[in-house]
Length: 328
Image (cartoon, rainbow, N blue to C red; front, side, top):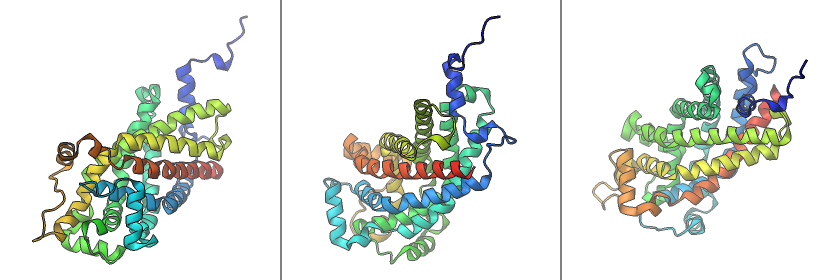
């Protein structure tokens, strides 16, 4: 009888789908299916570890995006002025909120992603197009996790740019109390829809790129398990996916950030000079930036955002994948 074809002769698409599948996608009874606590532990550690070294870059990114008249010529310019105004502490404005808030937010983010991916993968069109499955799962994870990420971002970003907008928060707790007292719950969730519209595409693209790169990495090392992928390979995957996704979505992130901090501008400038900017909604913000600052304005700060996101996503994804693989 004719000999069966070797495994390598399997259709390319089938091999890609098999390699794209995470351990938990083998089914709830699979011995490789991780418990929920493994994802929670890995996401907590990875989220907090990524925040420590990258928060200063995030502060510089926020300052560059909030400017309207080119007060900062480049990253070094904003770094020098930030240090001159407040020293090293100025680079870590809003850090406690971001650091401690990233733990529960990262848990919600990753558990939502894994649950969405597993559910979507049961649908044949998604199995046939795993990239679309990862894209949709990433977008859904962002919608859910923004319940925590948005309040964290509002407080963090207002503290990061308060020297530029002449705000006067005394610290993280004071900022939270002041925002809630002056603007209520709507202020705490300022820009929720804008965050979905900006970070939804970023997360979806990032996770889609990361999963696709993982396919190539598994093929390169000829492995099927994440345990066999080197830690540095995970970092390279995360950095590449994060950098590309952050550049593409920079205009969306810029409009979102300005919407979240503009209430601080209004509150500080009542009866004073005209606010630096005022947008009715996310799309008005995008169109206004385009009209007044052009394409260069939309992408101003993109380099700094990539400088933040690439190492941040590298650390986050590498720690998450490496830790979870060893908890299985």
